Image 1 (cartoon, rainbow, N blue to C red):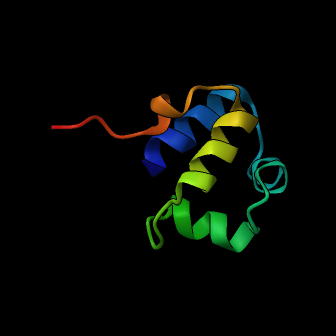
Image 2 (cartoon, rainbow, N blue to C red):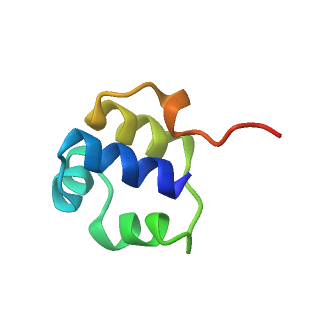
Length: 64
């Protein structure tokens, strides 16, 4: 999921700090999420999707 979030962030032209601030996630916590040291909550994913203007489903991994 981290790679999908990062790709969507770059596509939207949103900086790391803008994403953290607007999604209500502390920058160190967002860094942990994007570096896969922590797991995303549904609240995290919903906030990130809203900031990036994408549907939540675009950020979720595809089921096998």
